[in-house]
Image 1 (cartoon, helix red, strand yellow):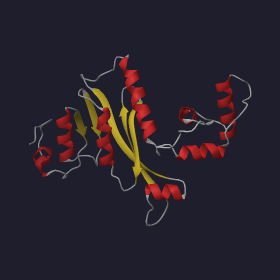
Image 2 (tube, one colour):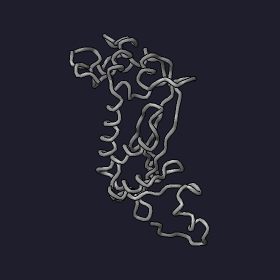
Image 3 (cartoon, one colour):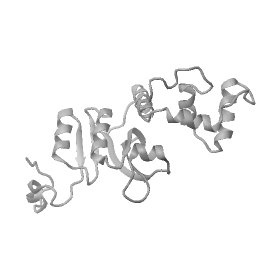
Image 4 (cartoon, one colour):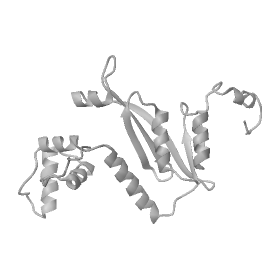
Length: 212
């Protein structure tokens, strides 16, 4: 976000733009803008409504990190007065990622990078509360950024007492070590033959083992 963005007085300042973008929408952008600004003014019809183009232009000056910060703040506020459910003393969390196609556009291609062929792709990841069905943290990056890199950023939203569950593709010795250093427990689904140290356990009848 530019240092000069949202510094002038206008019909669509920072707080109004963010509130509008976070508002659930089921109708056209023009209709939603009219309803939104009429509600702000306490009138049936608003006296002045920004155009769709103005919203699009203002949105370009808004960093995605704004929504990450707001989500973390909202989650912290929610949990501050709420008893969290646990499983065997742990708060259950899960991390998963996905890849999706982005709309065409020079700005999008410049930011996320073009593929050698096909559409522009992006990588997304989230930290999810399994007990409350709540997104605790999320990330969006270029396709060249791995799910592991995005997962590391999610750890800022975890704390001792959490049990973070990962699927295949995440196990890495350095990620195990990072969890240990933070005091945050984790469970990772491990593919066969991924770690030679685990091979004796695979071939045994033991229900569990400590592998060093």
